[in-house]
Every structure is written in structure tokens, then in C-alpha cells.
Image (cartoon, rainbow, N blue to C red; front, side):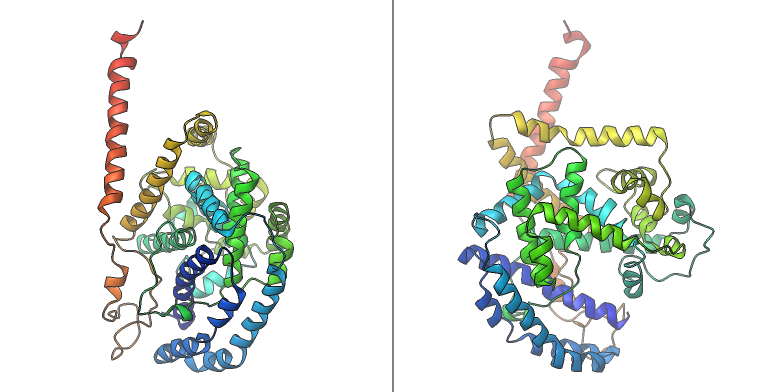
Length: 450
């Protein structure tokens, strides 16, 4: 495995765990304490050096250690001081705990649509940008390194035919791991920090893809004509704004472009124009759009076809961007099927808007919280992804793809039984089947028709 990818996974490990401690701190204090965050930086350089020494056996550690020592911590401390000045201006009158609860409600009420937005717009569309596609390709993030394809094969069906089974499964695992990160942020499947990794070593900055997770899903909900309320949108943006700081996003960007939903929408529009402003035909061939859509096809529970996934991406991206990423206009039967499915998806939202009793909505959120996490773990082989770094292996062995993991790593990723959550899903399933059977036998049978 390339050193860059191993080190990136190490950063993801610390970042995924940092979200848990950040969320616990917000719940305890009602706000994000800059001073406590500053205290948590004390062990950062030590952790960076320890990480790089682990990676030294695989090569490249000596190049990163001087950078981590001289540049990393001072720059992040300056970043934190700038954030403290900006955070003194309150973005919302709502307490932080209320914002987190509202943000979770947005995700649980619209989880299907948000997953569609992340798949069909953010990953399949945004990562196909000529300015972005080189970075995931360099570290083999979504699509593994393959022989450069012929530029004549630009049709999506021809490109899908070249995707191998091994590459398909690997890309699907990367998609699930990305979604696991979203669940961790929204407290849908997170676990407390373990003693193995101290909480004061979690803060590590990463990339700057904040709009992918915060603004694009809200934009797609508006596209589907089921937008949340302005209060819920502001709370959802506020949660990701907190996370964006620990992702290393510049405080000036957070202040100007993520201060409120209208500014975030403008930021998405201008970013899209910038990311796709270059004219390089070779990037269409290298784009991960077709492999991503192909790997998500014919998967449970929807079992959507590849042509259907291409139609959804075409709908969310629009004709201009779809042409840039190599997607052809969908056929009329596929287009009609897509709009029918989207219409059926919107029925719970319409029902929630007019049904006066709110207890069923809370039960639906509870079921979605439990069902999404279980479905994700089942697809990942009954384990909870903790972005285990490839450096956490048996020290006496050299690093590699098939190197055995150290003691305790597999147990840390295992899924703990949750009988209470399983009972909720069983009860809901029994009630649903019983209601369907009674409706069919008592109301919908021809003999019972007036």
C-alpha cells in the first residue's frame, strides 16, 4: 500500500474519533470551548511523530517527521486562534445541544435522499472534477490504479464493462466507509473513545470537502421539493461548521461561506463553476463517475440498475455537468421509473407534514437510526469501521495489504450485540406485515369491494 494512503487513513482514524469527543464537549458545555480545544493540542506533535515512526518501516516517514515538527502544530494553533475570534460572534440563538438534535432529525428524516445526494452528486459528480480527480487517483481512494483506458471509450456503458469484480467490491467498501464517517458525525453509530487512543490525540486536520457533506444534501432536498425548515437547515449547517474547523477548513471560509444557508448555497455554485472550469477531455476517461455508479448498482435493499443510477446522477447534476462527466441522457422508460421512485420516497414527508400525531415520527427516526447502522455493518462484513490504519499491525512483520493486524484491532472493529435495537426492528416489521396483510384481505380483495 502506498505510504500516502496509509498516512491518510491514519489521519481519518484520529479525525473520526475526534468527532466523538467534540460532540461530547458540546453536549457538556453547550458550546465549543476554544480553550479546551487548545489544551487538547498538547499531544498532537507527539502523535504525529509516533505515527510517522510507525510508517517509517513502509517508507516515507522521514519526509513527514520534519514537517510535523516544524510546521504542523504552529499552523494549527494559528488556525485555532483565528477561529476563536470568529466564534465569538454567535451564528445562532439556539443552544448547541438543540442544534445537534435538529441536525440529527434532518439526517434521519431524509436519510435516503441524503445518501442519494452524496452518491449521485458529491462523489459521482464532484470527484470527477478535473481539479479534484487527480488527488483521489494518486492515493487510489475510490478507484484503484488501473491501466489508463483508451480515450475512445467515453460512453458510460462501455466504461462500466471494463470495471472488474475486485475493483467493484473495493470501491463499494470505500463508499461504505465514507458513509460510516457521516454516521459518526451525526451520532448515529459512534462509540466512545477507547483507552487505546487517548482523547487528547484526536485533533488532526484533514481535507476541505465540507460543502460535500453540509450543503449539497440540502440543495438536493430542495431539488426533490422536500426541503427542511430554515431552522433545521441552519442547525445542520452549524453542526458541519463545527466539524469543518477540525477538518482544517480556514476560519475565514467558515465565516464568509458557511455563516448561513444562503451563503453556503452561493459557495456551492461558485465552487462548481471553478472546479469544472478547465477543458481537459482526458479527465472524463479518468473520472470515477462510472465506477462509483457501477459499484452501487444491484445492491440491496433497492437493487437499482446501473442505468437507473446514471439517470439519478443525470437528474441531480443537470445536462451540462452530466456531459462533462461522461453521462448520456437517460431513456424515457428509465426516466419515468426514476421519477416514480422519487415520488414514492416523498410520501413519508407529505404524511409527516399533515399527520397531527408526532409519536410515529419519533418511532420512525428510531427505526432509521438503528436500521441504517445495521445495514451498513452488514454490508461491511459485520464490523464497525474505525478507519484502522495499516500501520497498526504486528511490529515484527513488514507492512503490506495482507499483513496481519495487531492484537485487539479486530475486536475493536467488531459489532457488539444490541438486543434492544433488534427488538425495535422486529416489532416494526411485524406490525408492518400485519397491517399489509389485513389491508389486503379486508379492504383490497375483489370480494370485499362494494
